[in-house]
Image (cartoon, rainbow, N blue to C red):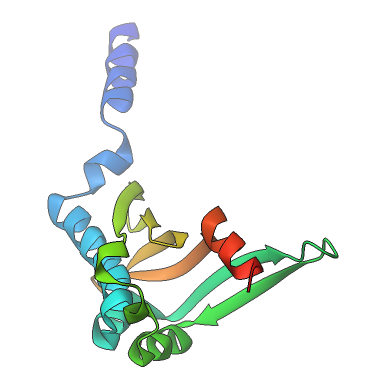
Length: 154
């Protein structure tokens, strides 16, 4: 009986449930969704951006007013983000300065967390497998210190 319990413990430690649940195709689809998001932004490709997003996306950033110390939550939905992409805001970043570092931080069953480092900000994407497609459902983001300093000097 002790041997069976020891064997089960070794199996659980060696093969966590999340690791067994994912396929190479899932991880590639998660990466592609993340790239559709950031490359779509930089190239003004609204179709790619829309393909990457769940229609109920919530993109949020908490900002604190340095003068008052009061924080506010800035929010954007999928329609706003697709419209901003279509307007070409991301295309204003010169190609040589575009940064698109994508790191899959965690995947478990049908959810994933991905970090995207862009030129002026860092995004933490929450991605869900929804109707057999990996789509971004939440984004929490923060400007880089350089981008904050540049915004403050305007």
